[in-house]
Length: 246
Image (cartoon, rainbow, N blue to C red; front, side, top):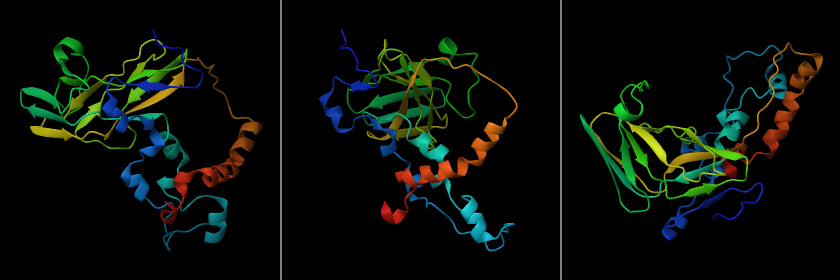
């Protein structure tokens, strides 16, 4: 029997001691390289016109900031946990077959046939029809009432394969295996141990009431005050510091 998980705690565990050197970690430790290299602001083109003048425009809004200061991107990249790949792998794709091999025995590999499993699902163009399933040696346990969304890491732009996303009720089922589709062009894809492989995002299974309406005066005031909330967010978030502070 599993020990009772404490509230507000997610647990990852494995039978393979060597994997503790490349463990799951908070997603904000795996920001994409392109994101870390992006400056927090850019120069305003001299031909760009602002009705109030450049100094007033910069004082009223974040007109010269980059994606490095976008709260939606920062929050997304920081959401949940990254499980790194637990072994070096080679996936061989040929016109009529696909095979996968692992450098160690920490996790198994199997294939899912399109004809048997998902023959009515439209496939993305250019991908081999059968899926490669990676048996994940990491198990996950969440508090009662919590599940995890399992998907590809955000904004990593992996161009060799796609992770097929899913949801696991990890308070009762603890395996988070990974199904993938690989590009169909003949290739030997080398996947390195430690690369960001999946993003695991816990969420509580609670239904929210939905309301659709016209905006109220209170809504409009909330939007008007948004700039001040954003300034507070920018001041607190480490990801928007200049490169000289990284």
